[in-house]
Length: 320
Ligand SMILES: [Zn+2]
Image 1 (cartoon, rainbow, N blue to C red):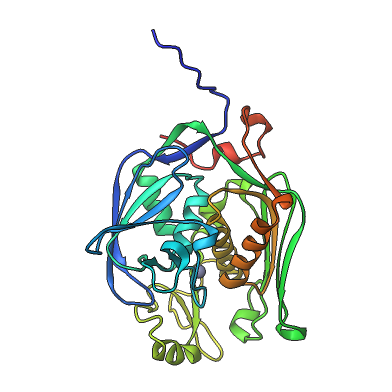
Image 2 (tube, rainbow, N blue to C red; image 1 turned 60 degrees about the vertical axis):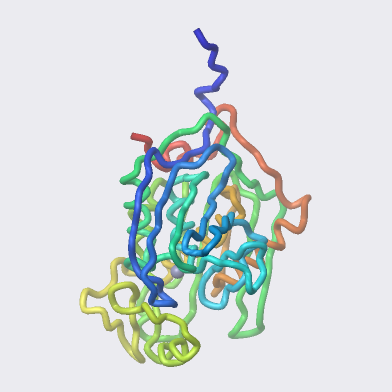
């Protein structure tokens, strides 16, 4: 008989039970891309592998390697501009965080994740269909100990993002587009990850774009794969998608979805309260780097007894 020292009360790391695949097109490149997701061992984190390159290159996700945040979070090997990269990871990272997935190995055949329906819902479905495996290692949280804030601009163009200590993971976001179609919807949302409502309330919110920006973005080689199948498209006055919005406040909910993904690139779920005012990928990443630059502002913690963990975290993704 073998003794098992695994503590069954521990809040543990998670990976997938089995391999799963997805095929789609990249939002910016318009290129076809295939993803193969495989289970990975404890403390591996989330690691992409560019298998289309002559010599496959592993690109582990971390705050320090997130390089180009013009439109979407790009993770590059070593963080250099010319290094092999993977773009548009935030919706996928958001789904992983929402389901409490810690470890995953992902083979990818292009430099950009598929946009799928423009939300995290397809990734949630993909991860859930593979099943979630509980691992014999404690889940490691990054607990924020001090308030950290970053700001950009002044007056009407002021943007800021802040992390504060919290026994849980709560987010609040406020947008201000001065656009009739956006202003008509809720512009402030609060969300508590411990509520267990990520899949229902946040994951389905789609990315959005304004027709006036499309020409400019296309001239810069961006959004070549974008369409009304994978984004809310807004002209000067209204939403053009015939089916309308998925949530009354879908715009600001998508910003929460993005922030969850942007923050999860630190490699751990946060124990923090996040507030974003007109923030975006670049500012969220700056916030994360500011936090990680101050060793006294955070610590890595785990819970030997899941009853000490924030409510709801043990139930994030039911294992089956
Ligand atoms: Zn997004």
